[in-house]
Image 1 (cartoon, rainbow, N blue to C red):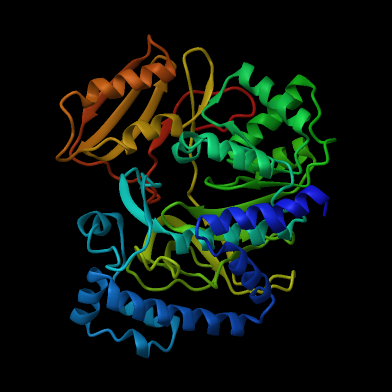
Image 2: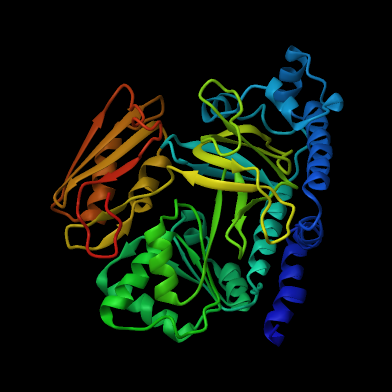
Amino acid sequence: MRPYTWLCAHALFPLHERLKGHDSVALRRRLERSQWASPEQIAAEQLQRLREFLVDISLNVPYYRDLFATLGFAPERLDSVAGLRALPLLDKTLIRANLGRLKAQDHGVISRYNTGGSSGEPLIFYIGKGRKSHDVAAKWRATRWWGVDIGDPELVVWGSPVELGAQDRVRRLRDGLMRSRLLPAFEMSETNLDRYVQRIRSVRPAMLFGYPSSLSLIAGHAQRRGVRLDDLGIRVVFVTSERLYDNQREAITKGFGAPVANGYGARDAGFIAHECPQGSLHLSAEDIVVETLRPDGSPCAAGEAGEIVVSHMATRDFPMLRYRTGDVGLLSAKRCECGRGLPVLAEVQGRSTDFIVAADGTVMHGLALIYTLRDMPGVAKFRIEQISLTHTQVQIVAESGLRPDAEAQIELEFRQRLGAAVRVEVSRVADIPPERSGKFRYVVSRVQAGAGVPNA
């Protein structure tokens, strides 16, 4: 480990986490020990933590105190993870209807988040320091699997308004000290892509992190320009937030001369699984219970596709218990050859965010439009369909709180992204059904983008 990386990983970042009241350093050390335990030992630890979590929320969270009493559910007598099936699933509708009662009465400092998720339904929820600490620790552990650490030069291709909106003086100072730099993923114009390629060449990062669609686009652009990015010593490319397609993995690996490490998670559900160098998506089983369920709610067999349902045991301030992610995945019964006892998520299906193309040819991440709608009060559901470069349709399911000028605001903000002459047609509908697969596509683009951009 290089001296400055050692300083960041062992002194500066731990100090940063301590000042924020996070336990991520101790948790990361614990996770690095437990990952080598046998599957049976990890399962036993998981059950113990689950039992303690359920007892805690039964005493301190009004919603679960009343639910457990109504069902006659005694968490202290839970003798297997399968016992969770006695509890109902938690979805966005239930969270929205019980927002206050889902907070622990003795909760500590919690942060409010707003996300649309994969279904397009805006959701308000809260995250406490406990879950933040576990998220940091789980990601940190997975980073070290690949021979990189906090403090190694990193470039992040990202588009979340939380990250982009938080670039204040303190954040810039922290990122500068940790040698982490941000490249916004919203606007992928030819000019910006040229700039991103040159930025990567000048920084020579040890690792990249971002959306697979954005990173594969950058890799393809560099190749078309005849600029090499595979000679920079990049050790790994971490991708998340979208489904990673085989052609994207191939393009990223070839373009950057580095392996791709896939990750699966969500802001509401937490960091769920990370890929090891042997190619397995390991579940963070010390903190999270993952179920895959059939449409009737029964458990899937290993290798059978079903909806991913998550119980995160570090969410006692605002519990995510049997939370429906809306994603479809398959659990594996096999143990990875890497030797870790952590269970394996064999595959995640049906998770992607489309690109959209502005009238001037600029390629943008679909989130550039999604954020306008998902954070707008009174929008229950939405669907964006780009018909052509000059015509985009937006469907919204309205509820109380929608402003009278909402349609005009949507049109204005979309034209700012897509082009002043683009026709943006906003209509209110009673409901927006999912696709035949059961997955809700909140962005669909019919526009054929340039080479390197995924087809809609």
